[in-house]
Amino acid sequence: MAKKIDGYIKLQVPAGAANPSPPIGPALGQRGVNIMEFCKAFNAKTQEMEKGMPIPTTITVFSDKSFTFEIATPPASFYLKKAAKIQKGSTAPGTSVAGSVSMAQCREIAEAKFKDLNANDLDQATKIIAGSARSMGLEVTE
Amino acid sequence: MTQFWRVTTHADFALLGNIVEHLDDVAPESMTSWSLFDEGDIARLDLIFDIEPDLADVRRFANIPDSMDLTCEKMPDEDWVRLSLAGLKPVEGGRFTLFGAHDRDAVAEGQIGIEIEAGPAFGTGHHGTTRGCLIAFSEMLDAGASPKTVLDLGCGTAVLAIAAAKTLPDADILASDIDPEAVTESAENCRKNGTPGIECFVAEGLDHGRLAGRKFELIFANILARALMELAPDIANALEPGGKVILSGLLTEQEAMVREVYEAAGLTVHRQPPLENWETLVAVRD
Image (tube, rainbow over all chains, first blue to last red):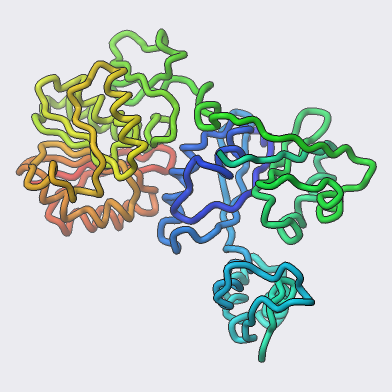
């Protein structure tokens, strides 16, 4: 018989560097998930990635407190900040510009994130990334 | 200690499922996680923030209608690691049983008990890596092995060094870790288990004065695949002829690449039965 799913936890975890400090500890601990077991399994799975890269992670928790987890590509904002060489987006998008990215960079990001984007082709995915860039206060250049 | 705030709402599971579907696109960076759990007749959604959130803002971005309850509270200042591990049952690995203080009476007759309290160091035995090492070590002891020099490299809680100390009373045992917090915890665990002779210290791999030029008959290396691969030449070099290293912390899909590196370093590698997708290898220097 399949185990009963109790719920889901979603958070961003640094690749290869999960540890029990916040936010992982509070997010998993409040639900009785074995924090150290998650950290070891997550670090084993992500150790080939760029260390510290934020990885959106969905943990499925079963009724016996055992768990599985799935990882996705880093958020578009992570790639965009890296491409624009900035620490954070604009606090007032639309009014102030935090930096700029080119459409070619948006396309590269779209390629990296394609499997997690709700897009039929790369052109559509690139437009989604360009939209994310603008909403962060980045100028998108041709 | 970072302070966290928890915003909670309750509704039907499917309704909350719709809310979380779009959360990642709209939530501010201060929202560090969400969790959605079934609680019988109703489901509960928690959103955790690292700054105090404005509930009106939360309703707006998460699209939570006014008809649904929404509360915000400061999260208690808990030791989450200990809390999450406190209820776990004792774990058996070969001759050894790992238990927390609350389970001191749970060690079966004939088993060697090791008391490991839940803490931030790796190695409470609740996944296949530590257990795989303890089983491989037990099999070595069953076969009559009696190494005189033992190193627990990347010792975490020092559980493996303690297992060695409890079964090899004449052995010279060292335990090292790159993490000072783990070493502090190791020393405390050694004291608690009546094995104070284990020398615990902070070291990055084998690059440490106390390890320079030393040879070991047994090395435990329960780390991660990449680190094991990087350390392969140093580990092979630190083994006595006929010495063994028990390698763990690698997933089934990483087994072949780790094995190849250790074979290339001149060791003969044996694979133990995998435990929940975790592999343990025993490599022998000829």
